[in-house]
Amino acid sequence: SSIAYFLIHDLAFTGSVAVIERDPTYAQCATTLSAASIRQQFSTPENIRMSQFGVAFFRDLKVRFGPDADISFRERGYLLMAGESGAETLRANHQVQTAEYADIVLLAPDAMAAKFPWLNTSDLTLGAFGQTGEGWFDAHSLLTLLRTVARRKGARYIHSEVTGISRDGNRVTGVTLATGERIACGTLVNAAGPQAGDVAARR
Image 1 (spheres, one colour):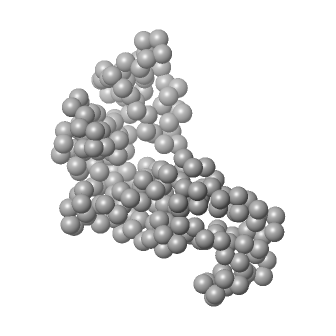
Image 2 (cartoon, rainbow, N blue to C red):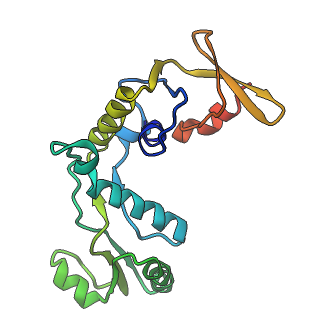
């Protein structure tokens, strides 16, 4: 739904877009079963930048979807902690994060104890805390916003499962569904999450 939304809304794609959903209730999908958190405390610039894009999207939600748009985003940060053996890793990651302008601070044990009085810091050496740009949200509400607009702008949602992928050499030309229907395509995006490998292996 996110890919469909950005294709149609941001990139003004004028071709047809079909979203094939095995479970249209989303009761067993990774989106609604996830912890629905976002953070910038990663060790690679690419992951940090993707999260920053996500946070900017969240903050711009009402501009994109209207004044009633709400995904209950709680920007309260995450604290990652390390003992002596892991402290150097936190420091190295922090250098990568600050180079990407992530708002992460390193905290000594006394600073962690002051900020989180309930925390036992006796065996801690260092902590890393995201002051902004980290938190959690309602993934189902976000999915609903994206899906609603994608459908409104012409995306076709199909309740089925991809059972086969047609190829011409290295190029994907279409998919076969569990219903027997075949759909030709110029581009196939495999967004099946944990099942993406299974989908990609289908012939």
